Length: 148
Image (cartoon, rainbow, N blue to C red; front, side):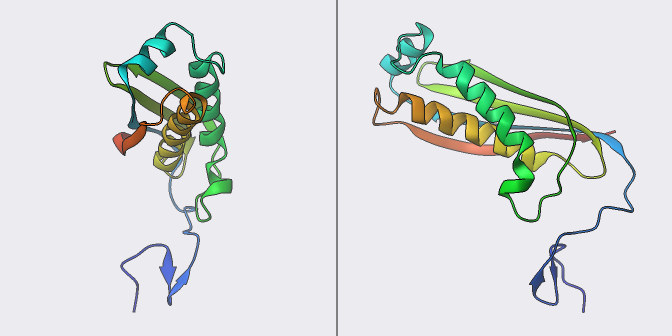
């Protein structure tokens, strides 16, 4: 009997074949929030945190993470990524993190977008933890998915 789960066959984990799928432009966008104290956000805005340009480092970390998703998540297909964008929105009590990933491929890039957003947020956390012990990463989710 066939499993309703594409990554299981006979109870065994497996990588799904996407060989039959057409190459299409695919886009996915993921987001999350890093909640922190207003004073931490003020220091971030003023570039006054002890570890330097926190947003630049977190942006590069998110891009690098999206590119390395297949090495982190065992059954993910390695994909040639056309573009990875990591953006930040500094609110009153949180930093919004958004990662958009584009590829021309046979499978979607949701996992790459989620990984990019999550690692960007974790990098912010790591670089700001000495200034704020209350930080929490919340609401990691896919907010948009398209295929050509």
